[in-house]
Image (tube, rainbow, N blue to C red; front, top):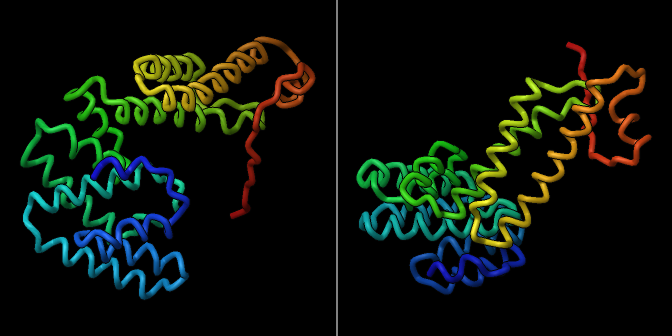
Length: 236
């Protein structure tokens, strides 16, 4: 059923209609429909019933469910509360045990990386299949996220960490981006890479001169547009 996971769903309602028509995923589909209707308590109860029903299935069936719903969540990350806590907890348990039982299998590591947010799982999966686009893209994104963190105080003319280290991290991201076979994945993450590359280049030039201008003002005066974070400090 993996072919469904890359459909362009419009939200919980369309996903709910699809999955409620499949016996194995009927309760999950109903959860989506009830959640979309705003019936929070009923939706959560339905999802818990789905998890309980899934737990009594065979190990093979549970792994199919874990792969299917993890993949669904990955390809529909913009759908709010698609994978709620009771389901996420269950998927983690299944996937984690799967990695223990079958450590040479890419699949559980890859989806555990998504469900748990643990980049090390993606790295383990990538060692098993160096060409897996999902693993490559998520690790590359994690490097870009590091740069995002290091640059989020540039609105105050401060770079967190070491500039050379930031450049190294960014180069690691680019090396991974170049390995992507999916043009869609590559074009999306490449835009982020190019943005931070230009931002760091501007910072490098700014940090080497003496000026009373703030970094944002210096960039603006040269026609360089960046999205600077607004930093708010709260008194203790």
